[in-house]
Image (cartoon, rainbow, N blue to C red; front, side, top):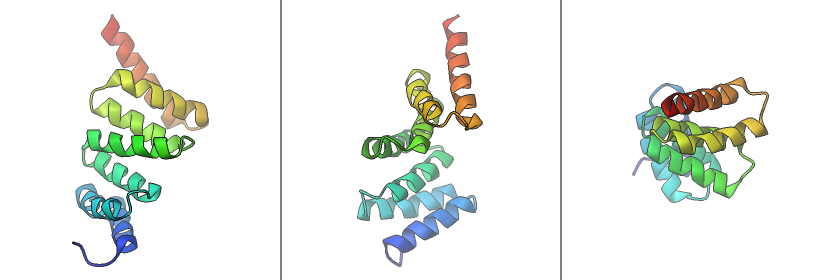
Length: 126
């Protein structure tokens, strides 16, 4: 167990993520999520760390949990869509990305991700 309490783990994990050490951040944040499984902020930081560590399936699971807990979290839909995309499930990535775009049409990176997924799917279909 790392030293400190859950809040310390969360703070250190977020700092590690911001400093470019997503694998180390994920390790700490996994302890925090185990201790506080209902914390959306811990789950979001963990999902971001997993995504940045290329653990896309695990990131998708955590983003999906956030969406289930709070369907108004546009960033969680975006993260879920990106995680599904990176894990190779382009079909499944479309819906959460479309929801994120509908919730926040002002965010270009949401719309760009959706356009790229849809363009890839069109190209694959012929």
